Amino acid sequence: MSYWKKTGPYRFMIPQAHRSGMRVPGTVYADDDLISQADRDRALEQVVNVAFLPGIVKASFAMPDIHWGYGFPIGGVAAMDAKTGVISPGGVGYDVSCGVRLLKTNLTAKEIAPSMQALMHELSRNIPKGVGSRGKIKLGWKEMEELMVKGARWAVAAGYGWREDLDYTEDGGCLPEADPSKVSRRAFERGLSQPGTLGAGNHFLELQEVVEIYDDKVAEVFGLLKGQLVMMIHSGSRGVGHQICSDYIKVMDRVVRELGIE
Image 1 (cartoon, rainbow, N blue to C red):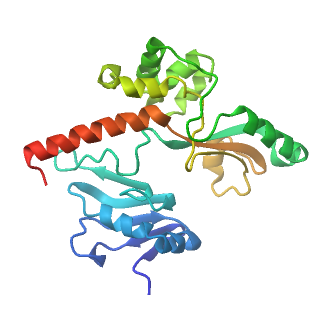
Image 2 (image 1 turned 180 degrees about the horizontal axis):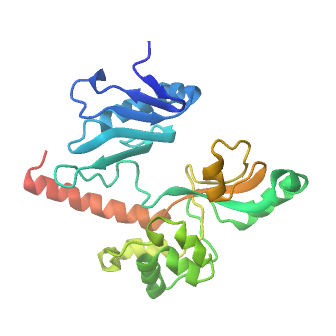
Image 3 (image 1 turned 90 degrees about the vertical axis):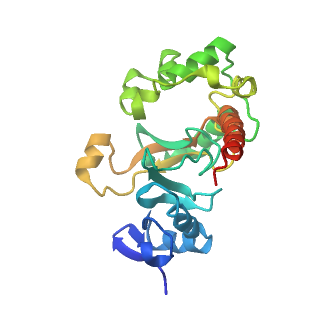
C-alpha cells in the first residue's frame, strides 16, 4: 500500500504523519506513472527528507520533473522562513539559475514534419553541447562582469533576444544585488567561453508539439495553440555557476565548523 494519497488530478500528498520529525507534508505534482517512478528511484524519500529541514514553510514540493537528486530531489522546491529557515546552496545541485524555458514558434508541427530530420541536424550542429563545450560567444573580463550584473538584459542588448522577452522572465532577467566582486577568478575563467552553450547532464533542447489545451484562458495568455511547434530549453550557468557554488560551500563548511553549528 502506498504512503501517499491523491489529492487532485495531478497532485499527490505525503502526510506529515508519514514519518516522525517531518515538519510539513510533501506535495508532488505528477500523474500516476510519474509518482510510481519517483517512488521506485527513491526520489519520494528525498521529498520526505526535505520536509525535516528547520524553517520549511507549508510543504516539501516536487515538480513533474522529479527524479533522484543530490539532497533535494531534482524538481524539489522548498520555501524557508527568513528567520528560522536554513540556507542550502547545493540542495538540488550546483548549477546556479538552472531552469527550463518554453519558446513558441509561429509554425505548426505538421508544417515542419517533412523537414524535421534536417532541422534537428542543424540544431545539433550549431548549438554547442556536452561537457566542456565552448560557444561562439567569447567574452572579455569586463563583459563577463556586465553579464553577471545585467543578466538577461545584457543578452537582449547584445542582440540575443527581444525587449519583450524580459517581461516574461523572472525578475526581469536579473537581481539588483548582483556583485561580481564576490565571484572568484576561477569562476570568471570558467565562464568566459561558455555563454550560449547548452551543457551536459540532463540539459536539453527539445522540439515539442502542443497536443492538448487544458485551460483555454491560460493558453490564450501564453499564445499557445493546439498543434503549434514549440521549443523547450533546459540549461543553466554552466562552469561559472558550478564554481560559485563550490567556492561558497567551502566557505559555509568552514564557518559551520568555526561556529559549532550542527
